[in-house]
Image: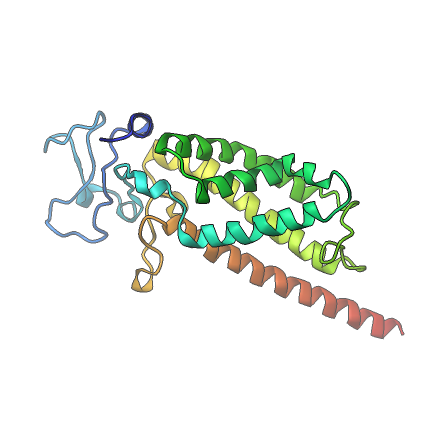
Length: 256
């Protein structure tokens, strides 16, 4: 039996744009009468549906769908579980070995987010509870973005906590993480609602893009895309920092 909250969430999403299909249409014409959109109120009669062949050039590839809910997809994949476990354990070690009372900082927004993720990954809970947790994580993420943008490092005195004297590593990590956070906030918080409203697959947020060998596919395609984007951001930021260091060294040698 479908979970009532998931069913309600599916109905609410569907109400944003009733013309969306339950699965993406094929990228190329298969039957000669492939359907890309239902009628304005979800009608599936031949006089109401919008055929892919009748769409303007280029729009077919960006047609989206609202897949049917699957409760098992709420369970975080193994990669998220491993990452969460490592980071959360490191947090606890630093907090427990810091100055007296430092463990209380586990109540700070960033650490609360990791506690929520740890709970989702390793504690038994109902589908309804998991859904509520995800809904809370989304708005709370904005607090983590603020922390990354304006970090307070005054009490970071333990091994691997101290910033380097020239600030190069800290600056690199700060701007990379900030870029990833704002990217995720915009495309998950803005692009997804717009995609649902207008039926356009903005940045391939609702169905995976065409890619060699379908490397980015399946129920976790957004996670895969996020990892690819964060890796690209890391690489570009690294090249920019290397260029900055090289430029500074050249200027110093000229001044000398």
